[in-house]
Image (cartoon, rainbow, N blue to C red; front, top):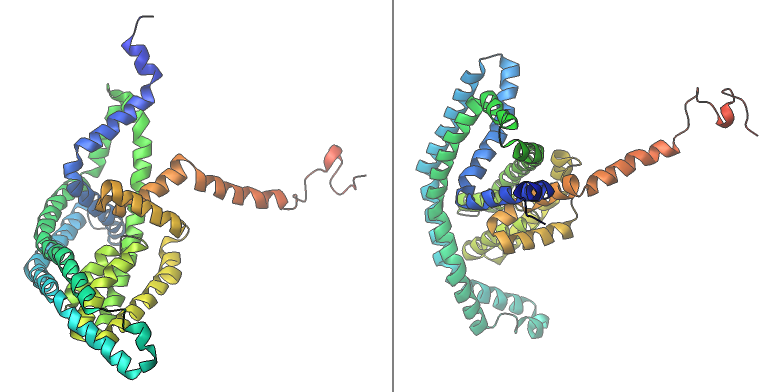
Length: 377
């Protein structure tokens, strides 16, 4: 049988289109940061612009220009005042890690002196040689990460400025840009447009909703944690608050990762009592997040079992690094609910079940076509 390209395309059209889309995304992997931050800014500014436009009746373009000037001023202030301080604090924390050994050994000695009965159990826990080796390894790994992260804040700010420009141009002419994209339906890319447009828009909507909700939770977490750190008298609160904010976007694991630097700083400056206070504070805030913030902000959206979330995070980090941890849960939620329709089937069952058990309407005819109210034998 003679091979025909058009027949091969028709038989494998969907697979070829999605393979082309995945390949295009892969080719653009070096621009993920700019694309993601641009998407993030657009998804956050559009609701604000729509709200202000409805409430104030000011021209939409005036609101857009004023809002983006405000964001630009905030970025400039962050670059001038906050980034240098965070960089200095990150370098200081990295150099102070070896001092933890004496603090921990002194804490162990004090604990044994106060409670001699626990000496057989506590004595082997913190061996000086093992502790030195552990802290040396921790310094070699965590120190460079903290210093590099502080220095990379400048690169993050420059990327944010470029993304701010792109998002401003997109928001300023969003209607025209959408009309131009719709023209693809009548072009030679008709098949590509009709196959991918709706799923991509749905995925963008799910991702934007998830990021907006998580940003509100992260902001609230950061404010509560900052107040708690100030009450405990912790130094370097700017660095610790930034760490808490960014790691709040990583479900489940984020709270453990962001707590470690605060515990290290507490032990170095205030002793193990303050470190316990930090752990108690973070635990209380995490309980508030789990039982108050998540139900209020998320509602019934993006509810996944914590075990599934952990699996998604580990798999995402293994294959895609930080991007896998950041976007793994929204992407998995989209595939579960919109592609595999697992959540949709469950919600449909919950809606259908009450309808089956509900009593029939008063004017409904009984079986056999008898009049309403007539008993059925």
